[in-house]
Length: 404
Image (tube, rainbow, N blue to C red; front, side, top):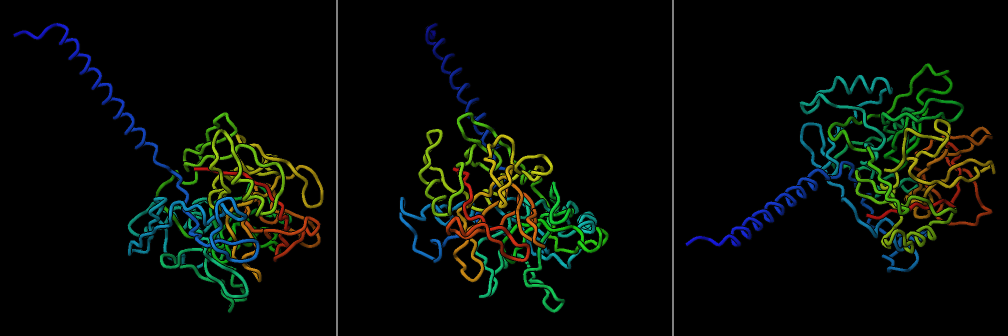
């Protein structure tokens, strides 16, 4: 018995439909396979809540201090000790040198990386500041009650400064390969580094100031290999007041909030924001916010903030009232430090990182530094200055929200 013509046509249509579905599914799988994040942000490992001065119980949704770092958990830090002097970060795909060895100069670090064959690999490199910052954990603590390092000491060897040699405990900075696109202090060439003892990013003069740029400083270097795309953003302007970073999987507020606020109000602003029909905005943690710094830009080099031009940045006055400055931005991360350890929160500088030294206000740490401010205080109290480089305390910092 012959199959009717109409049935053949139906059969052909069914086959065609199935083929189309297979093509779509296959394409979807390939798209998802190729859309694996190249710049996943490792969480800060903060699980404790704080108000302006004390550790507190987890605040309820909609109450003051809700929305801080501990309220949102990201990619939990995860490492593997390979037993050969290397440690693999299971989140980022980066492989790290476990033990940094002795302090060396910036130039010697590159020669060392080129000559290294640790673990049987010969593609070691000096990490960028974004690669290096992936290792910071804000479960550390600095101050008079002792120091707890801002790095996982189960997997990484991190020394203190050698007090027997006249160093401070915090003089154990780890340098990156990233040089500041500008000058700090009195015109010094500057390299960004992470201090895993006091929990900060700062720009450090490449040479001893008194040496007239002839004697190189020595710092620690932790070499890295793998995932050469890490730290490279893939921004897309969505045309609705938001910017997506396809490298990190985060969506950002294109414009900031337009005014300086204290930490509690920064949290409230973020939790109450509705933008582009999304209401799940939040204050970024320290590592998320640092991910959008553009270290190829600076006020003195590009006459801009250290951020991609796709973002809008409010211009403000500097601490002396001079126009043309760019604000610091709050994070939801408390910086446990000092004599009042819970009273400071992390901010990231997108303009000059001002400090007062020798009686002058100057860019002491560079655009893209990460420091901390008191969470609250009267505006008339600020700016004040503290620390060895006289960091300017602003307190009323700006906000740029994020969502997943």
